[in-house]
Length: 363
Image (cartoon, helix red, strand yellow):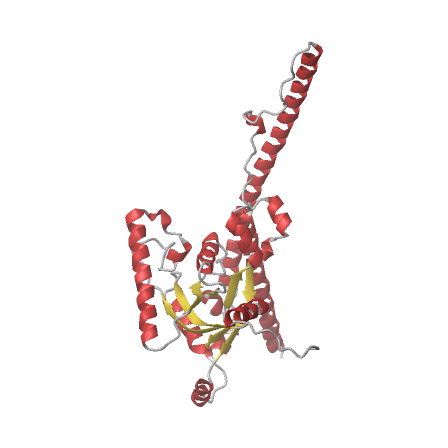
């Protein structure tokens, strides 16, 4: 500095806050053992959907996932609420008072006991999010958003690891990390998803979730051990899975779900059409009533009488019609985009394999 004075000292809290604000989340780094645990849990419980807790460290722009543990299945409930993970998403709130309280207590006790056991053996027990399995990429739901919001109350930067066992059976590791966009979370807290608010915030259906790049890493000891255990045969089962030519099951299910989403989107559009028809009808009624009142007031002024007010809040035609929420249509549109991306990617791979086999036959 010009005057030779040292810069003012900052507290550790101020420095940590500045660093956190300056470094947004860029990468989710998962240890190989954690990825194997997630894959094993999701595959063993198919076709049931499962969830589990993610543990690790939040360091700068990298979220390290160093451990995880599964939530046990709940067989006494329906297949819509298959694990303790649904406690966080509040999807079991309609079960009834006693079942709900029992479920909350069991789930909380289980998580606390697991945390205590991990802490006793000196394992990372900091919650950084959760993982869940999905079926054909059908994960973009209101329950997932509610779970994110509940986690955000205590963990500012949490992620959800989504694993698709069926997609992974095609020779691709279908593992992705998601987080809610900041702008969407601010709007979700107000529960206002009108067209005006969405235009004001400049939010589209693409701005609900953010996908964070996933990096799987191993320690030097694990890498060296895997190198020693690597067989002489270079081809693995995963390599053979990539050569499977059968595309019917996966494509049919994707198209089936895509058609269902299109039907749901059509129903949402019908809701908005009904709303705008009623709004247009109400505006016509308001204009007719105002014209009649103005004519009446003109006659009253000519007779020397006091004019009547042109606004009557108690009149039913002046009550504001509630606009349907656009959240469901945004989620359905997002899901349609996901299905289309899956069909597009899988079709491109299938065509490549078919052209390759055709070339082999020609030779």
